[in-house]
Image (tube, rainbow, N blue to C red; front, side, top):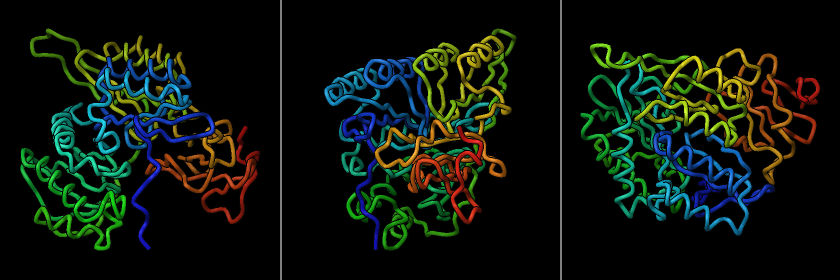
Length: 388
């Protein structure tokens, strides 16, 4: 039996109902967001939501606690800030990119992300792509969700390899042909039934073989997993302009505790961002920020509750929305702590394990006090896990 095509992924125009109000998901192609748009997101969270931004496992953000009467105002303000360029494509712009691409001498991906997003927005047929459909753009270092993508582009030397349904296709292209080919594959996916019969290319009856054939390829072996979270701290250093005319650009990786940011933390990260740069969102609540000034910025961000070094208690702990979700059996945000023997636990309020990072292990609530831990035969009381 094939899974249903429709999914519960919200957008800006189709909010998901929850215990704490409406949930809006705002797509940020590639996980890139400019300082002004980041500030606009913080204002939306403060004025129309619960005051927080939730970072998703696909490099997008969610606002929670949206009142019914505020839904239209949310869409209006988001559109004015450039966060809703097409109502028809509200949920179709799921693009992940390697968060360190273009930094520390790595190949850049920002232009490819922009081109792909422009092609999606210009094609009415691609508005049919469902909210779970994923494009991945990878610079070869991972962090783009490539193993679980529907259509992926991975830099290989001076060219690009095309991935379909998380599998090799044997298609290698020059960079300039990559976006056109990805769009051709996406149209073939829609024609094959993605968005109508199923939500993901891998769920098609042929597993995506016809999609690969549409670009001259054939499905091969699965792509190896390379989606490991970044360690908090300094991640890259890029020299200033020749001749000493500018300062060295230092990129820091921050972790938002349990992948949540307050509106104040949003303001501080925007202020710390170097000019003409973008914040990048990575898996497990990571923010990659090219900084305007290193030492003072890190100290201020740490003082505001952000994680700036790997030794923090919650550096490798994530959680779903817990009690805010109508399906959750437990308040996992309140309970979440490190779990001995499981270095990257993801605390989940039910078996759906929403928001599970690809490198994490699920710790699943079976009721309000007991959790099923990987490798355990029986549920374990939260007190035995050190939970609060």
